[in-house]
Image (cartoon, rainbow, N blue to C red):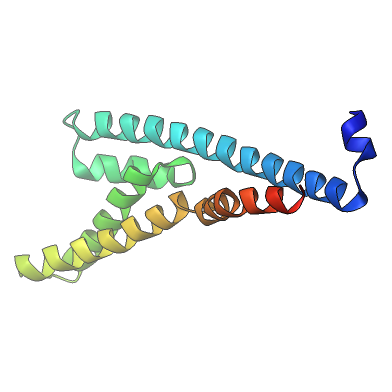
Length: 139
């Protein structure tokens, strides 16, 4: 402790900055860990329901009722079913157009889910690459 108190103000400021960055990084890491754990649980629950033999209409109904707490796989399914249902209501009978539109909707949803999962990773990458240099500056 005496070493920190006897350091110059610039070294103390750098140590404080590194401490704050470390705390922010651990907060992001912990929140990512918890989010990925929840995603795994949500996806496993949906996959079990999907392969249980229930009809797609029943699954869609369950998903729409629980859309706020739905996991990524469930939201991906919901976007595909929404597009499929919309096209079927318009009397779309061309299977190629139906599948292409449904796959496109699911691809967009997949990209949104990936973007959400990757949020704040650039912060962690920046901290990992810059922290050693900030530490060296303080010595």
